[in-house]
Length: 169
Length: 176
Image: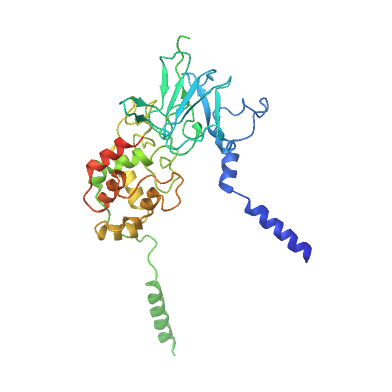
């Protein structure tokens, strides 16, 4: 009887920890690419924060063919109260910001400052400082770029991947 | 009881029971706030702008789904490389998108919506979308509006039947 109670208690605890919605989100990402070990280069183009709760913002930047990773792009971020940070993309186009370093106040969007200047919440600078990509709409709550930016191009429910036009270095 | 009487009794009971249930295709009406004010008074534009980003209510999986040029489109051809009312490439919110957003919003709580509208917009907080926007109910997007500010006035004036278009325009201008 005691054994049964113990098993019952364990089962209750294990079941209580289940989050079927999150489990489904993780499952939808599919398996790892066997040729890429888990780490900074894995799963480009996927919604990083589904698993990486230690990130506040993370994503992948491509060149304007929407397929070639943009290595070395700078992603500048400004949150709703003006706090700023930036990150640089790696060889597969991935970038990330740790929540312990920058915890944004949402929405991350476009503002006009007191001097009348337009401040973009997200600006991506490639290898030409005069040719940047600026996010026109805002991020309401989700720091994974790929929650909205996915697929092979614009569609009804996505603007397509984040990209910056390659230009003269 | 003879056989004929029994049949009559059974038929009467069956008829009575049949009337206790609504038909499966029954519809209820909604005393809804005005669609014209939603489309042209700025309510739809404000809510698309504020609530309809693709990571929030610009998703078809949400109970409240907002369509428009700030996020989710009905027609993929309306999406530019940089969608958004302020960006090149996208087109403004279309009539069918206003319709879809309106139906999604009005149909969320039809009985409560009718009650609020029938009472001239009194106690808009009966509606979940108002409580969530104010942060009074759990809302992943947080408390976005304060009772009496332009954003709140935009929505509540519409529920009251006299949309404050200035408040809606200001609400768009004041928020990212």
